[in-house]
Image 1 (cartoon, rainbow, N blue to C red):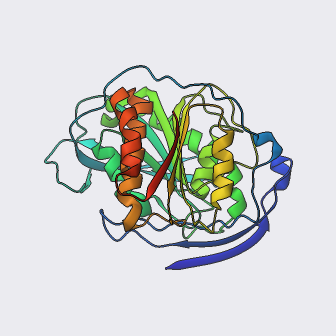
Image 2: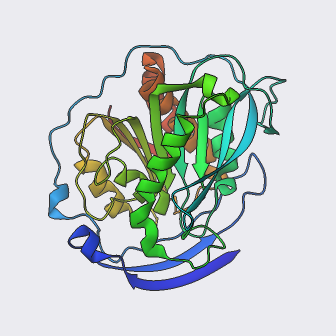
Length: 332
């Protein structure tokens, strides 16, 4: 287990407010494709939600009608080297539907040929002192279900970053937008042919969820049709903006890192179609006990929000509650 402790003011000037954030970060590498990734810890002293995040009327997000793939795919894996200047390298690992035999548990093959088709793109952001591979089990399952998943390693908040700077979260939404730009402009690369630029979403855990919130608020990327925030809160008290999108929050009721109350307050502030999966007794990290509930619920949500699959929308509540540990507030 890796641990880092930091105490700082989280760039209050950038948000016109904000508060003191105590950060005790730890990350445990995922031990296998069926195991859960441990992740960063960002204790928030009080709710980060500001008065600008008061609940508003919900505007329904209506994706273009479609059907998500019924079959599972083999999973390929590729690495790309992007950057936003010499001091901001953004190495990105991509999981995608590939040709080949489909194992019961995804087993990514480096450089496998992409399968024919057009698939939504999901950008994933890790938490503090973490890395994309800590989420390989979850991201491989999304790829197996028919999504291209690009996970960026951030230059100042990932494990081993030198120097490590928690406050650099404020710069990560622009990093994420750059990675989306690059993924949607791969040119002659074989992956370019299978990415549908009209169906793009973003997801993240903890600090990466805060980064994702920034893509729907202070740094709104209007290409995004869906967002998944896991154990996260808002981006420095900035209200959501732009066209409607589908939003799913996932939070453990006993999270003592990013508090459940902080996450739920932000969920209530989303002005579009929204749902919140509460993991009863869950903490800040994804565990073996809640992995299938979280994987199943997020997959059905993405099938609806990015493929426009009405049947998947109808399956979100059952995926959330099948194991008996999830509770769903559903305003999709």
